[in-house]
Length: 484
Image 1 (tube, rainbow, N blue to C red):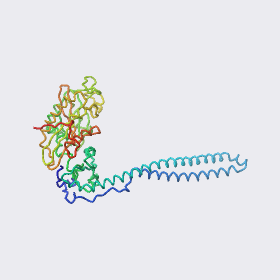
Image 2 (cartoon, rainbow, N blue to C red; image 1 turned 180 degrees about the vertical axis):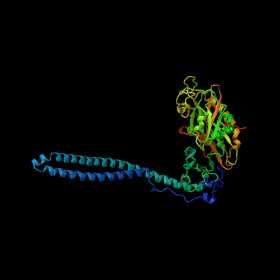
Image 3 (tube, rainbow, N blue to C red; image 1 turned 90 degrees about the horizontal axis):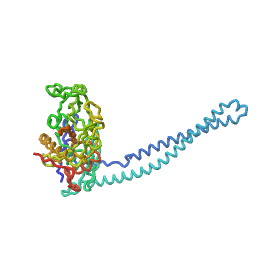
Image 4 (cartoon, rainbow, N blue to C red; image 1 turned 90 degrees about the vertical axis):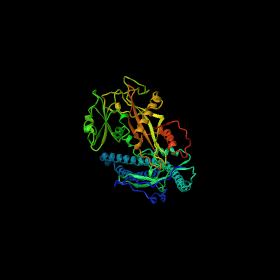
């Protein structure tokens, strides 16, 4: 069963101090149910169509009057004598043309009225359906909120609650989608909480009650992150704490070299090669620049930012972009994405490690590799190309798992798991291979980019971390790494 919540902390404010949340604050607040009068997208569209219809009808009336005026003017001219009409031929032609134009505008308005009216009928039906669904959802929301206190107080309960609080960062949305597929887990509504000093709207579970899981960790029995793991997710800290796992790495902080007494790299490759300038806290292949020397990297560094600087690793193994098999001539650069998560059970500071054997990616660059080409299509291996069907996966996976064991053992004492909560955190680790069979890791991304293909993997991860009410504990995706 989930452990009891301790008194949480509010997010850090502009003062830089954390504000303790009193029991009164986290107690059951009066729920603010969404109002039926809140407009659905269908209602907004219907109102826009009605305005358009009113405007078009007004113009139709205007053109009707204009056409009638033009018709009267023309009739006056044509009622005159033949001699008069001969003298005013041009005036009569202009009057007839004016009548035709205004009559055409009137007919066009009628056509538009008919078109908008038909669309309006269709949208009204959609609006009625949407409002019906909203009423049903509101009824379901009320029942969930009313049922919650009775269920949460049962020590033998078999129903569990999660709430999606729309956090901008992290994987909370994905975890909630996975939990939504569990028959014994119920989605609990969220509501607006407060706006931060930076203008971000935060949400909490409706009534500010604790959840078995929520991405708003203040109100969650379970945290989807573990403190102090930036020693591996921050590129600078990773290079300082686990240098033996990476290619040679230098540092720039606020436009100053952070190595060798503030001097530029000296022990560098003699042959021309690409150098990478990477912002320490950026992921998803962003914040990366490619240059031909450390000096160019230094010149591109911006004030107030922290970077790592790396020369391209020697003798990269290149592959065919279709098969992923080694290809010496015209081969493409690639990296291997391995998923790993850390898990800390409740009532303990122990951290366990799992690597994903059943899901991963080979990410291949768009164009053939060159040691002197600084274009992104050549040097950046971002796009997923081949999954674990890759022929080399089984052998390479075993080696990557060994690397993870060594990496985590070297930094695990720095992690700070919450002592009374379940805590877990997903990482994407990127590895590279060389032609002389070296395996190097060059970065670890916390909260990596995931897509629908990762949902089965995430579901099995949650089966381990949040086993309450899980449909099955069968696991064919994740391997536990035994730490010494």
